[in-house]
Length: 315
Ligand SMILES: NC(=O)c1ccc[n+]([C@@H]2O[C@H](COP(=O)([O-])OP(=O)(O)OC[C@H]3O[C@@H](n4cnc5c(N)ncnc54)[C@H](O)[C@@H]3O)[C@@H](O)[C@H]2O)c1
Image (cartoon, rainbow, N blue to C red; front, side):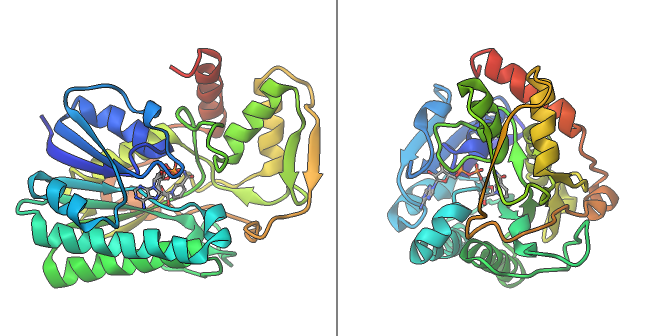
């Protein structure tokens, strides 16, 4: 086995559930903590080596019970960007205090912790003047960006003061199998595929010229697993993405083509409060240089695989 006992916080969410599936075959035991506020326990497989703990990462007793045996922590639990503007204190409590508490308890309770992997976000870049954006830049404009970025700082504090072996990965617009439309906060790719399935137009907020760096889930899984294993990641912050910009209009066209339509109808709506970023692509040079990682999936490949998964009944 590559890993001993591992903990995945937010393991019933989109990325957490995909990660758990991968970890089960290469770990002795996988613990999941998830309060199911947006996650779905049915997204997790049944396994004798998986223990699901329904609860919050802010529950000290729960952490004290699980952490002593844990060698590797993947900290994915979060309140999402849309919820962060509806409930700014809830965002602070889960994303910042929850992250801080997990770090503190990891330091206190884990006697042989090999890695603490934290999934941060490209949202820390706001509207960046340089595209693709390197890790050195930041521009905080939303509560979600503030709480996620602050937790990055605490990761570094625990690394420098207490040698907690952290690694911070800034993910960008992940899509692919496992992203469920049942979660009302799921990303635009899942929403577009579902709209086509329902025979409804693709809803676009703004004029659709805003760009994002869409990253296929398998590429993200690859980095997450390597980050927990390879020494080169420790103490560092890395962007995870493709470095390529795709406008929401281009995404709509791509999904239209993949689903066999010449030009699928779109419906333009005013921007929401969270739609502040006009351009986004992350610079992945550091990840390429330091650990020789490059994304394997083009947007088209990833969309085709996602469509296959949807047509095959999401198995
Ligand atoms: N999906 C993306 O495009 C993307 C992009 C950038 C960063 N990220 C980061 O990756 C991580 C996972 O994202 P995701 O897309 O899987 O999100 P998700 O919303 O699908 O999963 C988050 C999970 O955390 C759980 N959760 C929320 N509050 C909790 C609490 N207090 N205690 C325990 N569990 C709690 C939810 O129930 C959910 O299952 C997050 O940290 C997110 O910031 C994701």
